[in-house]
Amino acid sequence: MQVLVLSSGGWEVFQPLFCNCRVCQKAIEDPFSKDFRTRPGFLVETKEGKFMIEISPDIKWQAARFGIN
Image 1 (cartoon, rainbow, N blue to C red):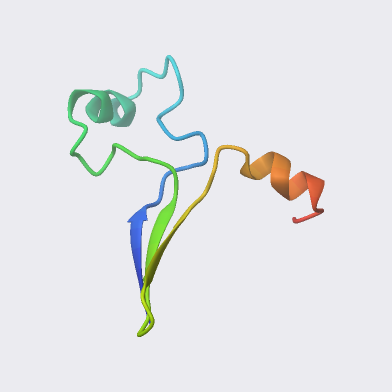
Image 2 (image 1 turned 60 degrees about the horizontal axis):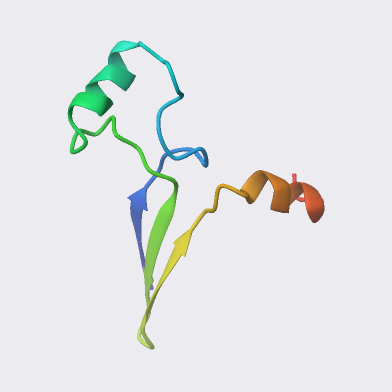
């Protein structure tokens, strides 16, 4: 089995609104830079096939609902 990390940003998807720090500004200017983050996603490949996992913006509510710390 192989796991490829497609993205490793936070569940909120993009940099915080109205942030003027250097990293966020670079991400806005160049969406192909390493500083541009999208929500976490993974590609899992096995002998049987491939599937993707994406963490939804609802993850904090889902975790709270099911008591996941």
